[in-house]
Length: 136
Image 1 (cartoon, rainbow, N blue to C red):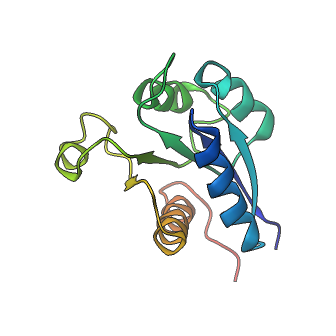
Image 2: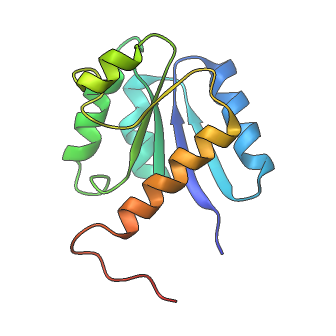
């Protein structure tokens, strides 16, 4: 099975590097980092990720606006987005105003929780209406 392509968009290079190295250790993911929110959409179009991990608060374009742009892009609209944040509370996330209802994980996130959330997103996408059934 080919590794899933994961794009991490976060303005903190140390955070994206840590997540990339952690995910790559599993040998199940090919990971690319983008630390400039203004380049994130271009990077996503070029990389064609299977999933995007997106910081909420970034200079330039914040995560909420980037998520809206991703969902409006025909080539990226079906890519699941998971928000990562160190500043949004669970209550704010539950209200959905900040994350638009996307899954939210608090930083620092454990590998177990991150992979579980990612795999749930892949499963939900695979079972979305209008999608062909997965081959056995």
